[in-house]
Amino acid sequence: MKTKHIVILVALMAIGLNVHAQDNEAQPTKGFYLRAGGGFIAQTGKTEFNNADPNGITMIQQSTEISTDGSTINVKALNGTLGGGFKFNLTGGYMFNDYIGAELGINYFNSSKETIGKLTSPQLISEETAYIRGVDLMPAIYLTPNFKKLNPYARVGLVMTGAGKLYIDTDVRQIDGGGIGTDIVVNVKTEVKSKFSTGLGAAAGVTYPIGNKLNLFGEVEFRNFSIKSKSASIKEYETRAVTGSQSQLVPGQQLADLPTSEKEFIFTDNYSQSATSPVPTNEARKIPTQYVNASGTGINVGVRYSF
Image (cartoon, rainbow, N blue to C red; front, side, top):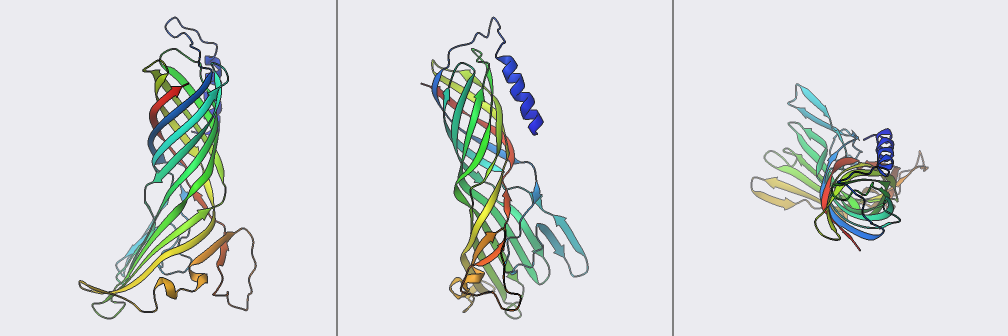
C-alpha cells in the first residue's frame, strides 16, 4: 500500500461520514475503547540484508546464497525484510465523536527466522539467520463512518521502536579443518540493540457487534519501518572439533578468548581511526550505521470493547 493509496482511503472514509442508509444507522461511540488481537504479517518492501559478519569468519558475501562444487559457482541474491511473522497487540483509544478518535497501540512482534547469507563449498559451509523479538508502539488517528452493523474504519499513524532486539545466529563448518576426518564447527549468537526509530503504519478494516459494547474486528495492516542499529554484542561463541560423533571444545577459540574489538560493536554515522595504528583490541569496534528493514503487510483479527 503506497502513501497515495492511504490518502485515498482516508478520503473515502471522510466521505463515509455523510453516508446514511436505512439498514446502517449510526450509533454513538464517543468515549474510551480497548482493542486486543493478533495476526500474521508478510514481507513487503524487500531490500538487501545487512552485513552480519564484521569478523569475517563465514566468508559469506553480504545478502547472498552461494554454492560451488569447485568448478561452478551459483549465486542467488537474498533480498527481504525481517518484518514477516506473528504479532499480538493491545490498543487503547478514545473517540472524540462518532467518527474520529485517537489511539495508542502496543504490539509484540515475533518475526520469522530469515536466512540472510549462505555459503556452501567443498571446504566450507556457512549460514547466517536473523530474527526480531520486540515491542513497538503505534500512535494513530482512527476514522469511521460509524455504521450500525458492518462498520468500516481506517487508522493511520506512526510505528515507533519500544523494546526488543535483533538476533543473528551464525553457523560455520570447516570441512577437515582439524585434519582429515575432523571438522571445525563455529556457532555464534549475536544480539543487536536499536536506536529510537519511526516509520509509517496504516490499516483498513471492519468491526461487527456481538454484544452491547463488544465488537469483532478484522483488518489489513501496512507497515513501512526501518530500524536504526545502535550496538551489537556477540553473546555466544563456541568452536568445536568434530570427529564422527565425537566433539570437543578447541582451546583458545571460545567467547572468553575474543578481544573486546571482536565481540562488541558500535554503529555510528561518522568516526575516525588511525590509518597506521591498529584498532585497540580492548575497546568496542566502531562500524558504519546499519538499518534493519522491518516492513510488512498482514492481517489482524480480535475484539474491541467500548467503555
